[in-house]
Length: 154
Image (cartoon, rainbow, N blue to C red):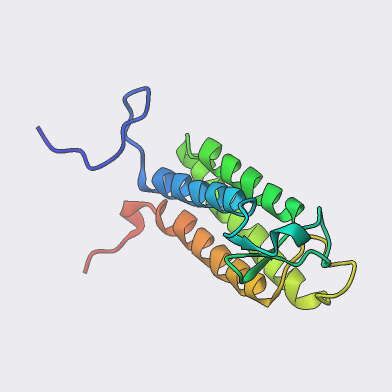
């Protein structure tokens, strides 16, 4: 008998690393979405707007947030947890979700932060976090689902 290092689901199946990664990423997004609604964790909480660059609320005093921004984090977290139920769902969540974050990074670099186009809203800290998230999520999705037979042994 060998010891199992993975988490067992309701059907008795062991979760793969990509499923665990998607679950963890989803849980972090869910937590961030919740924290965005907690005064103190989010500074200038009383100045939070539904959307737009006018929101002066800052998650952890660094990342500009709005009600819409927090809702997006919550939905992204729920999607990650739900999609982590299957290997293909987890892989798709990480790769396509990472691609979405890279597009958000580019969008944040292109738009003016004080314009109506900044409806989410994002600031410079958000932009670079989106870049790191995008690259990390894609890397997790690709690296954790590589075929072991494709790896050459030297």
